[in-house]
Length: 91
Image (cartoon, rainbow, N blue to C red):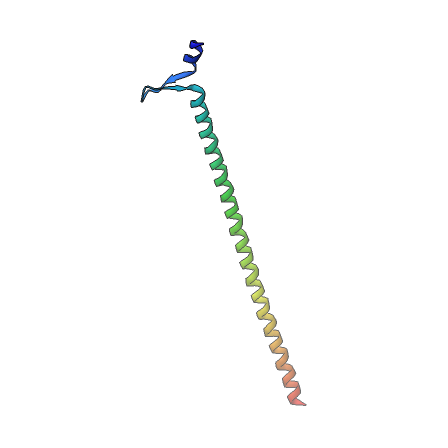
């Protein structure tokens, strides 16, 4: 059993303490998993932000189109009212 324990531990080159291999591997795997999750989270956030910017631009374009249409409608109504007023004054 002591041979098995020796094979399951490594000596830290910095401090000289013995570290359980499964603990070291677990920490490495956990760190790698965290890094991968952070990478995926950043990619997702970047994608969401890009879509948000795209939707905001589309919304602003629609608002500008609506204002332009309202302006045209108001101009047409004003012209029509002016024509009606002129007709009324001629009678």
